[in-house]
Amino acid sequence: MKLSTKGRYGLRAVIDLAMHDHEDAVALSQIAERQGISMNYLEQLIARLKKAGIVNGIRGAQGGYKLAVAADKISVGDILRALEGDLSPVDCSEVIATESTTGCSNADTCVAKYVWKRITDSINEAVDGIMLSELVDESRKIQADSNGNDTKAKYACGK
Amino acid sequence: MKLSTKGRYGLRAVIDLAMHDHEDAVALSQIAERQGISMNYLEQLIARLKKAGIVNGIRGAQGGYKLAVAADKISVGDILRALEGDLSPVDCSEVIATESTTGCSNADTCVAKYVWKRITDSINEAVDGIMLSELVDESRKIQADSNGNDTKAKYACGK
DNA sequence: TTTAATTCCTATTAATTTACTTGGATATAA
DNA sequence: TTATATCCAAGTAAATTAATAGGAATTAAA
Image (cartoon, rainbow over all chains, first blue to last red; front, side, top):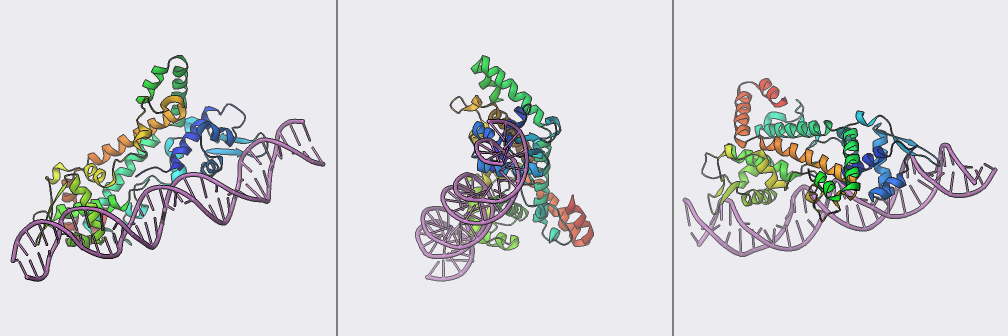
């Protein structure tokens, strides 16, 4: 029940990109270096984000990536689903009962599906309720605090 | 971001056990057959449940397993955490910022942790809010409906 | 027009985890 | 004493994840 490095690295990469989105375009090599992630691997992650319409790639020298839409229009859910696929704890066929599946032939299986659905809904609700812009704002606050006072930054992180 | 078969099979096994808990003790072979799970594998899953104090094993002929406590005192969260370990989407060290970890040296990492915490809390809240007894009640209802009217059962399953 | 920087794309490999299987030892009711 | 069970530890096969590698295509700038 763990996110893979796709989701973990990828979310950090998007936050990093959003933090630097004022510049012309952010090269992947910069993100990779700042986040300590192999650039080749990061390429594969950003490809998913591009496909999902979250970032745009700009080819050629001085190229890089930019957010495709404003940070307050992108939820953490959008990002994680682009990177990981759906966030359900079981495969889709195990959640949605159709007439073709054995479905209710076994009542135990049936109520288990109800559990999976509750978990899925709860996860999606949580991640869809956090917008990228909030993370950027929070991140800037932490950085600002950290410049003036180290202890305060650590405290902020613990919350 | 998927539960393993440990969690999927294991929850079904516990529901099955709870459904038959009026009998003296339920042999693993019966559960395995009803649920279509290899008995040897199920053994490993039930060992976790035993260790967590959710079921008791009764050795010897006519032995088997029984719930260690009443079904309304066992949450789905208890069961899944026993089977899968903690239900956090990332390893513990990535959620809890300590002074020893690099922690807030990187603000992006820091706000990502906040996301992981929100997801973890949300999952735990969902699974701790469902008691085993509710699943048993629901399962009996479905079985009863299914005996009288197939269409109704399918409808109940879809919710 | 060349060059360096960059995205874009596909294949391969290494590492890790999952999902079992196997083979017994131990306990106990009948 | 025997059949029926739990209990326990190793081993293995399959699948997935994480990463590496190599090069084609594009473009700004020298």
